[in-house]
Length: 109
Image 1: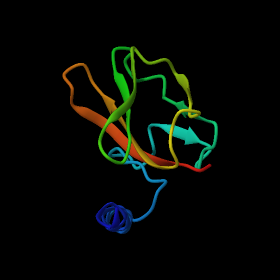
Image 2 (image 1 turned 90 degrees about the vertical axis):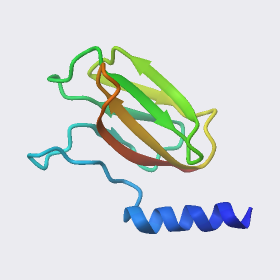
Image 3 (image 1 turned 120 degrees about the horizontal axis):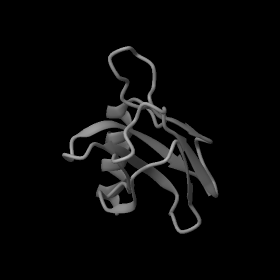
């Protein structure tokens, strides 16, 4: 238990915070998500230029995939009632599996 806590603190310090997202070349975030920290649900807004065949995935802190949606829509709401408190990582992947964008959010209970 102590090692998991230590690893989580190191990851938090290394990433520089919780509500960050990898920015594309023009420095504008491609994915908006709110609220952060989230309690019961979180909404992701994808720009319209994203292809529908992208895959959106959410992973817990241990790296286990807890959510996946293929053929995304411009607005996606994820219910967090079954999620534990902590930091989660989201990834947007293209049809070849390459990560187009990623970021993290926090679930607070």
